[in-house]
Length: 398
Image 1 (tube, rainbow, N blue to C red):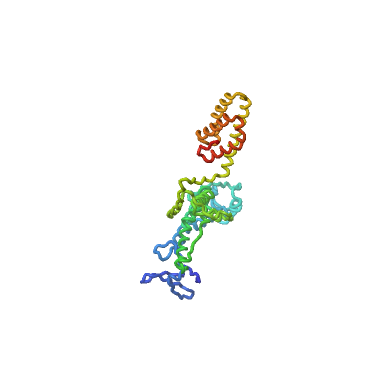
Image 2: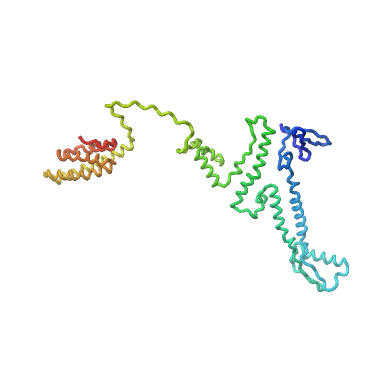
């Protein structure tokens, strides 16, 4: 259990002959008690001897004294607007008695100072007003007070904008100054607290530790923060839901697994290669690779189009060359010579395979006439599909 707090002024730290420290605490009534260092939670500030910290107020007493003096001078300078900005001159003799002079000053202050400043003055008995310019020292009062604000902030490593001194702050640098305040002012103190807590308050250091969570203070602007999240997610050491939690957003199903870039892997040794299958027999054909259903449907549609084109062209030519066997033969050979190029293009076949198919079709028509084309809408289409999917280029019509 943590004990009571002791005021620093009532504690004296002493180094013994064995180089250990002893804390002597003065109590009310003049009594004192000694404590070993392990029983005292001592958070040191800037120190010159490594034992006791130095008071910022004592080191900055000149700066604080200057600030107090400036406050007193400013209060006197602006009090009731009575700072003499000029004098009243009598043309001949001054007031006859002290009471006359007192009444004159009282009347002047009541009518022309404070809220009545800058009113039109009425002068009697030949009096004249003579202005007195402000001294350079007085004119620098405002600038010196500005400097004092920054000087005091400097003692505590405080950015001026945190004490409402925004003269040199801009929208582009104020965010960076806030981050620097956390990194260079608060982090040293956080470290002191963490180390002292671990040394003085925690016994099971393997299981517990003290830590200040400052991620919320170091978030930075939205653009930089999201770019950091993207880098962490894409390299696989942060999940997308962890990034959402940093932004106080609810988790989404399916975003708890880290992404693994394809060009990165772990340093584990490669797995042993799978055992090779026994070689197929000499007379045993290897199994055909599976064909995707979508690829087969595309090939079937293209093959049916080619078969219809053949049948339509042959029917028109048969009517034209009826009774002219020589003309029919010449037309068939000419048509299929050109049709081979179209078949090769539409079904992505080699030129030799397309030409072999078309030569077989042409021979069948020359020998059997148009009757040889009966059933080609399905049979020829099936042969073209087989030719396209097997890719061997040698499937021909029987």
